[in-house]
Image 1 (cartoon, rainbow, N blue to C red):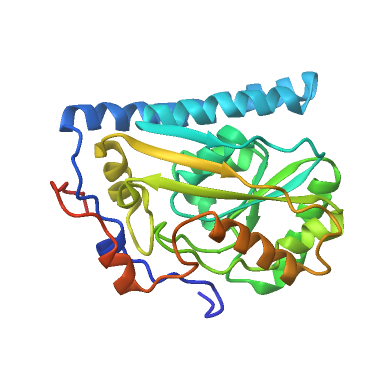
Image 2: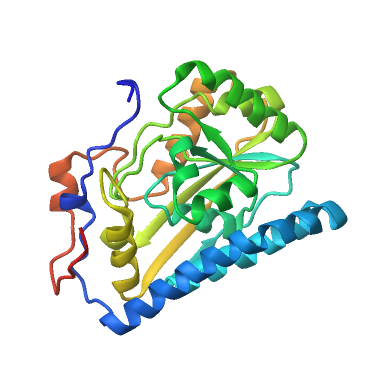
Length: 289
């Protein structure tokens, strides 16, 4: 793995533990099975959705994607709160802070489109095949020379009127802090002449949703399904219009500050601050290794 890859100070032991009231094991098991079944249904129905898209257009695919993503979140026991409305501009680069694998269906439930994901997602069970069939653009993060081609593919999709969603921090944070927005993806918005839609994602309770560091996916799944009243909020901030920023670095900084200023948190927290900001313990939940 290349040393230039972005990292976060958050760790599973310090930031991704859930210490509030939990759901019982039976309810958690039902949620887990329901969530996996909902994801699997997306894999099975993806070819059908592709045929509908060819026959009826992208609007139908977006409607199906919204329904499926909301069903996945509901099955895993996640409540969704949406603040704001999407702008009406054709094509846009959606940029959001990154906390969890839940961010992907959360964004798709509100702003369906094509995603930019790390190439490792291809090998994930269920989600990998679904992402590939859904038109996800994959980035080889440890091969810097492939980045220009990926940015060019994003720009082509944006010019064609597609919405492309990116998590420009390049790594997940626990939600109590935020990383720097890397500027590379913003070049695609500049090249295509489209708006940037900043999005702020928050979860409550935060530790239940956080998927950071070397946290095993199974452990994260179990935290999610055992959490009580897990709520995801997605806040759509005012778009940054084409031509308002001269280069990708200033555009990335503007989006980063917009997302950071919408939160009571500082733009960056240390490991100690992440741990000390966790809520007081009321009960614990065991997670599989």
